[in-house]
Image 1 (cartoon, one colour):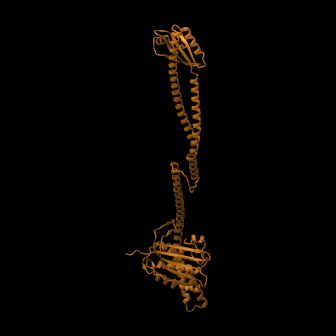
Image 2 (cartoon, one colour):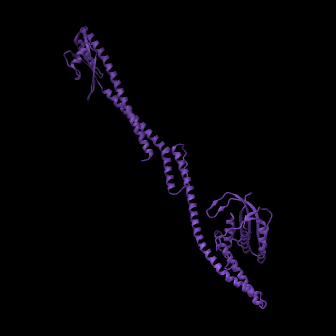
Image 3 (cartoon, helix red, strand yellow):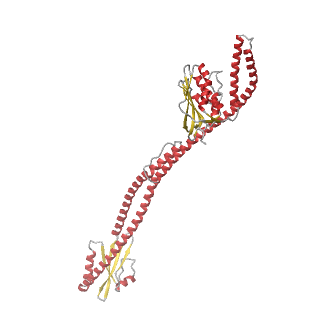
Amino acid sequence: MRISGKLTLGVIAGIVAILAISSYLTVNREVLLFETDMARDHEIFAQAVASSMARVWRVDGRAHALGLLEQLDAGEGSVRVRFVPRDGHPTDPHIGQSALAGVLRGGAPLHDKLEGPSPKLYSYAAVRLGSETPGLLELSESLSPRDAYVRSTVLRAAITALCLGIVCAALTFALGSSIVGRPVRALVEQARRIGAGDLGSRLDLPQHDEIAELGNEMNAMSSKLADASARLVAETAARVHALEQLRHADRLVTVGKLASGIAHELGTPLNVVSGRAKMIFQSPVADEPVRNNARIVMEQSERMAQIIRQLLDFARAGKPNKALIDLRNLVSSTLSLLRPIADKRRVTLRLDSSEQVPDVIADAAQLQQVVTNLVVNAVQATPESGVVQIGLRTANESPRDSEIGVSRPAQPYVCIVVSDRGTGMSEQTLERIFEPFFTTKDIGEGTGLGLAVAYGIVQEHGGFITVESKLAEGSRFEVYLPVPSPP
């Protein structure tokens, strides 16, 4: 049963109980008053009739007095009168002779109530003729009017109780449904939605009571659960990503060890090949085809040596040799070294030197390697007659750690910007751009270690790298290096 129904039944039961008790007390009080008034009227009437009968008796005699009494008894009223001689018996069987004797001796009038199928009220008064009392005057009246009054009173009380119960039931049901029923149903529906995982819906209860307070608390609970669920999803994704990174790192450790071993094993034979090719190239007896082949062997040997150095740099866990360096001079000198490569591909390197930037604490050789890798990649991605822009600027950034997705407080950085208008990269490529051995270049053109090495160097320096790229629109790399705190 719903709360509104229970409230309605409870209110009706209470009202019926109160009205029943009130009606019972009211009927008893009214019956008592009715009987008291009736008994008093009987006594007065009995005394008046007895006095009148005594006067007629003294003047006209007994026969005339009894005749008068018979005429009075034969009237249309409900009151009956009767003369009871001293040695006679009253009609009321409850009246004893001792009680009648007391009235005959001059006592107060006597009355008695006789209940039963035909209830009656009896009153007795002495008929005195001076010092002689020949008998008693008996008055009897039916109590049917009393019973009719009681029935009418009970009926009125019952009708009143019924009407009041119906009205109170309707009001209680209506108020219970509007104040309790509908809000509780809304709370139940909200609880079901929360149980089903819908944490975005909110309750809007117009009332200002405990139920509305419960609704507000449920809304607050939904918000907290939504936040907790979002945090749980983010933490789960971060854990999964961290686990994948750990597995990948474990594989990279193995690959690094293998690469380092292979690089050391290949280093000596490669030096021998390169030295012999150089001897052939410099030999005075070698003709032009031989010298040309020796030169090709030397170039490919140097390329292989460069790949081996990258493998060793990637596998070697050494600490950088940091010092305070002028970043602008380092970038300018690096571009000077790379211009022949750019000129060979007919690409222009353009340095923006308009903004002055502070010095940074870094390993010059490692930073030169970072700039070299980024610029070479930009040159290779740029078509002929294209331009690669290199710039320096300062910025206050709040970097986001790509590993765990957490923002760090903002701080000043020096930013190296390398941008091109080349082929660009897809979103899938951007997600893996810093993975070791990942490359989109053709076989023989790249090892997939350049950006991975650059990424690791920048992280060791307390910085980070961001990249923006779109297919056929070019790419933009930004290297952020922290500005040292003033002494």
